[in-house]
Image 1: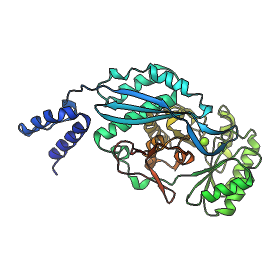
Image 2: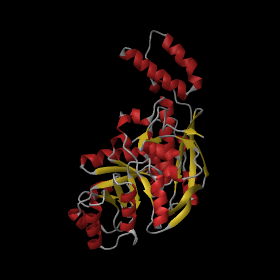
Image 3: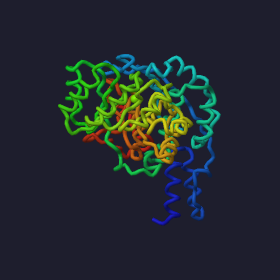
Image 4: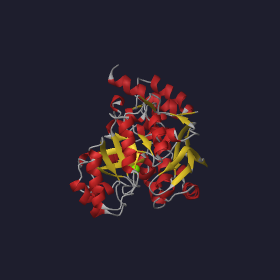
Length: 385
Ligand code: MG
């Protein structure tokens, strides 16, 4: 196909999807002297319409971390509609992030998205959303994710393709084993058999016992260690990093409290394993601050305010020669699949949040032989169940 016809085809597909009322007008345009239509030629008459509802995520197992335990996660499901096409997003709010169903719905109620009649003005729309109030990162992410789903559907393409990423380069995803009794850890490791990477939560007395069980049951599988700020002694942490290195561990995530910058830099300088920032790391400017403190960052859409900023984070971290991990909260397949679109260009993925809940609303990316598998559906690549 020559370039002119290809461009014409792309324009028509996008316009047909975006605006059923404009199809007749577009046909008349194309019949005239082979004009090449483009999306920008079509008057934008639609409005972005936002709707949302609270949706409590039920966890399959109690989730035990160094600092708390829980069986549900509050969540708000978001829909963004434009000329008959709906994009889906969500805000997931694990308690330590400080957001709640009430704070998210209050924030979403403040938004006036109907002022935008061109959904492709991503920068204008998301800059406005970011300016409405401070923090509210999960609430902002819900709009960003729904907008990306909507735009991908209008363009008829999944986001990993729009960004030019090779879906064959997706990494394996880790399967998380929480802090628990040896019997429960054994059960969880049994469940983890199909996975090629294990994430072990640390921070309490049984750290070495958990790793020993994983080593014994899955001797060839690498382990990433996540302390969730649970260690409080830098000499102990350094000793553990050396021990972990000898026990199939490949990196340590958030060893200390997020405010322990000097202690973390001290550990990073001496540790044989890379140190990755999670709770300490939220928005794009943090990356520059953390060069020399952490070896890498764990990007989560509920912290980054969504895909638009997460995409910039990947670029900046790579330019600074830092490792990039893509993670998630407990979320439905909506937000997890959104994040999976970025996974072909990251070093590590921890995208099992949808597998931890019993009431997913979507089908999306799948894990096959432990590897993230992206599908060809437009937008985020999700469908309502
Ligand atoms: Mg973490």
